[in-house]
Amino acid sequence: MFKRILRIFLIVLVLAVLIVVVGGIVGFNFLRDNGIKQYFASMKPPAATVSTTIAKPSSWTPGVEAIGTVKAVRGVDLTVETTGIVKDILFHANQKVAANAILLQLDDAVERADLDAQKAQAALDQTSLARAIELTKRGVGSDSTLDTARAAASASASQVTKLQAVLEQKQLTAPFGGTVGIPKIDIGQYLAPGTAVVTLQDLDTMRVDFSVPEQQLPLLEIGQTVRLGLGGGDMPFAGAIRGIDPKIDATSRLVNIRAEVANPDGKLTPGQFVQVRVELPEEQNVLTLPQTALTTSLYGDYIFVVQPAKPANAPAQTAQPEEKPAAPAAGKSADTKPADAMKPAADAVKPAADAAKPADKAAADADKPAAEGEKPVLVLSQVFVKPGRRNEGMVEIIEGLKAGDEVVTAGQNRLFNGMSVAVDNTIDPTKSANKQAGQQ
View (spheres, rainbow, N blue to C red):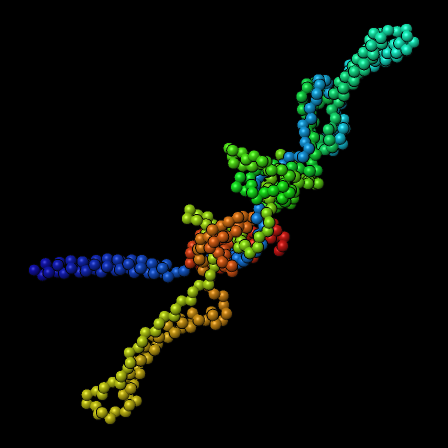
């Protein structure tokens, strides 16, 4: 009987120990998970560093932008008119030549010989004509003889002119002054009519052909200023519109525009793609932002506005119940001293006063930054806006922006509404890194 009771006691003891151990493990895990949740719930993310700009009205030069193709005002690929073997090349690549300069000479020995023979025949026919005229004056020659002599002399002169033209076709001359390209032929090569020899381009003045939508056609007129750029946002070349096609392409709904621009330094090359901007009259009091400040999403275009955080309300102090003097204890006389009677009440109030100190300290700490002039905490406000025209890295904001708003221009990655931020305007996103490095 005793052994049975002892066995039962041991079993109960082991079960109790197991329950305590398991309960301790479960309780520890619960308290740990709960503590971790409370820690991360109360932990604030670090402030993100951003660059900002202040929105303010400014002057705005609107424009019509397009992509154009550069061509020379005078440019042609020179070809030969007749057959022949190349005898001499009288130019080299990228040479500037004058108008009517001889560029190529074909073998013309046969043509020269024929021309000399025909000149001799023409001289003989001219002498026969003079003799026939003289005989006719004397009344010896007949009119038919004179007419025959006159026709022969005229035919010989025409044949000389023809052979002279054929001889000139053996030479290739520049129709205007300009710059020649790389020769496409070699000495001794046989050329057929129409064979391309070299390109000749007058690079002093260039023309730019571009197209704009039909909706923008009323904004354009002859003589408007046009600026050209090769990329990167800079547009150093200036010109003017010289022609507007009176017909709109029915397929693309585009209208062709032609402008001319001076090219004294030769930086523009025929066949180049360029950025074209037709400048329109200047406008005033337009709210603009750098294009880097605008973010586009499926829900619309929005910006982040930096605002001071609203001050948190100080925790209200819990009203303490009014303490009453303690009643005299049994067996004590009623004439006990007042100080002795109030001592227990004072001891009861002391813990409440000590408990209220942390709240007062938190309120004092909340007011401390403002008292010491420290910077207020900045937070983000996501604002949806309506963008308008764009120009030179800037975008017009039609709706949703007020003058004086501080807008984030760089560092928008992983930002969200209400997030705390720190402003660092040492880097201007509207300028290239090379320019900013040169200014430092």
